[in-house]
Image 1: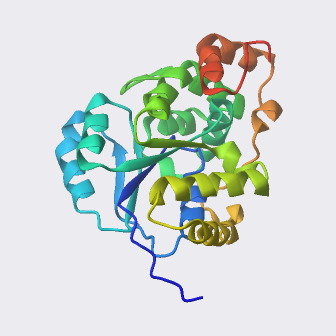
Image 2: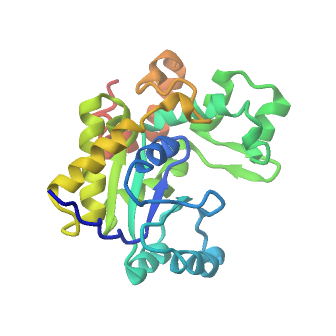
Length: 258
């Protein structure tokens, strides 16, 4: 049977909570025929002051092109995406695992300009002390660093926004079956009726073949639930006090009895 050229996909944004599987999602999307991104293009924070510049970047995107970012939720950005008719794939993760990943990643030179990282490195904090600071927040010379609930919610409010497909890190990593379903959701979300079912299946199979976490420069262990190996009773208590409700809202716990 003669195959037709695939209709181009509209530009979109891959947005994520930091340390939640951004590079794994990029790996998978690299298997989508025709899809591409420019490494130098990225959107960070999305504050009101950046809105004009970010608008110009989004408007310059071409068919089949996507851009990656860690963009805070805001009504300004919601209105912008609606105006430009740009969809978003939003990746998030169990905030406990995000905290652990961040605590270890602070040894990397990649975060040398982050104020919390500078504080952690200059104070020679242990992993537990880092986790305590990440969970409860800390007062830095530059100003207060937010606790894990505030630092997470400024992103996770995207989960329920219009034209946004939420995908969890756990969906991408738990098993080949869950990863396959997540890939199909992404392809169906992006292509809608433009692509035939068999074209979507072929793209998903190609995406699956690109999965290789060890090639990600941010990869450490990547195991969902690894917080259990790092949290003692004190850290559990602090997390429940600070962000227990957030875990319930995101669907990671039913109550605070964990």
